[in-house]
Image 1: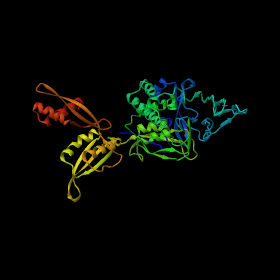
Image 2 (image 1 turned 120 degrees about the vertical axis):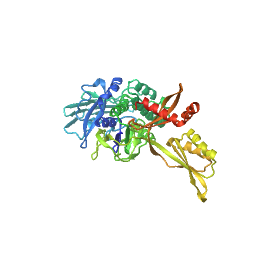
Image 3 (image 1 turned 90 degrees about the vertical axis):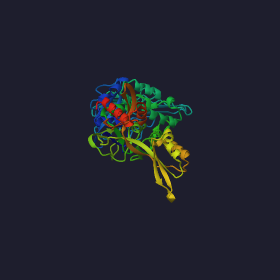
Length: 511
């Protein structure tokens, strides 16, 4: 099984995931459908993060492209501020917390000259006028950065009007952050489906946006289809999500895992004010994720809603790196710079060994000493109707040597309460134990139809086909009820009908 493992001890964001996947071997040329559909281009370059060579992927406005967006850059790591609370990755806040972009705060790179000459004029109806002269001209190893901010503030009571003209230019490139319409979930789905992407990529991307949309709708108390995604529905965020799905498809992995993901700490500025880290949307997303989170290790926002949603849909949680034969690895750069640790997301790709599929489950149990055979016989059907995946009834000995039965039920975690209630009302038990969320390893299962010719007539029998994660078939079994019906009508033994059905399916599969 081809395995992809993320190490999120310094958080995760959309652009960190893009960079990590490219660094681990994904071909950035597969991103072209996004560039064709949106007014953006991807710029892939390398940066130094505390001695770690990491890959940075910037989403830029296509119309400002002054050169090859995938060419080598000057090593600048661009940090942006997003209203919905994303940080250091898909909407990076500045490390100093002073509200300025990292265009003026790349301390790890030397030979940067800064001259300040920016003009801010504030008009107040109370008769006070404030004029500030700040100009930013940044020279980064022969790369010119100019920032012209004109701010006009009018105060009448408590109303504020802001007109900010921001031009963040790097070698002719302008970040796409926040550009494009703020779409609703149905609009995002329609756009993704129009890009001509592989079916699996469309399925993953729309599922990730659903995770984001439901989280935001829950925060704001709105309906999913009517909730605007704010910055998440802008072009750069769509480029992040769809881009990750395309790169993942290019890597051809069968399973994605992640260790505990760091969320950071402190507070983050959002469109509605300051909130503690993690942001409300991140909390909603991680509550349903399979992996765990941990605070710190720094006072900064490390896990963004986009990064959380991508991992929530794609990744299983592990505590340590699984056993694997490593093929490649790489680091995706985030936007923060810390003095004692690199802000990077590591991706490791290799052969994970396991050939079965991990399925998250819970197990319900109860002991019965007074259930009738009729009740026990009906539990298979009644509990499966309620959502049970498997039901096992085991004879046992109860207290005082009374005969009894142990009922074990395999369920999905989200179905546990409903199935437990059905088990209680069907059997009269006064308690049901749950072993909690765990997992089982299962085969991939498909059903094929075998057509059997007997005495000039044709009969159909369904055959269950079990295969591993690589598609290698290792079991076929005919459905008993179908085989019994054919045996009854033809006079053949049931075992013979089942054998012929399995052979017919194997022949159709070329074996």
